[in-house]
Image 1 (tube, one colour):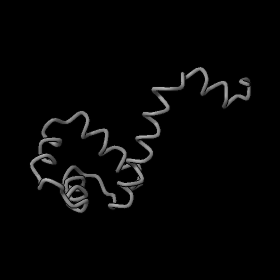
Image 2: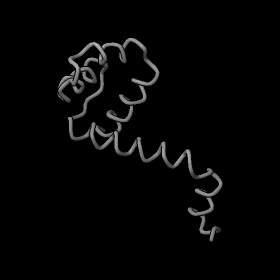
Image 3: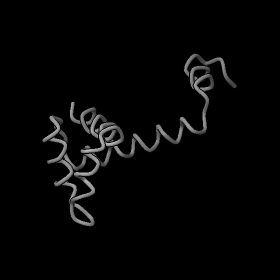
Image 4: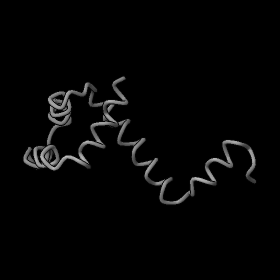
Length: 82
């Protein structure tokens, strides 16, 4: 699942110092294709568009985690909240 691979790549960038440094060592503003290739070298398959979408999802999820408690999310899912 390519979008899942792109999300996994973002997570791996947070955890893996060597991978993060390899991205930093690229040009001042690396082409997204270079980052996609780095993902492929890490065993993950995704396109530049899927990476963009994954960054959007990741940003939204992190924003929600900072602002909404898990209890509120589950209340909304169950329909208990107001």
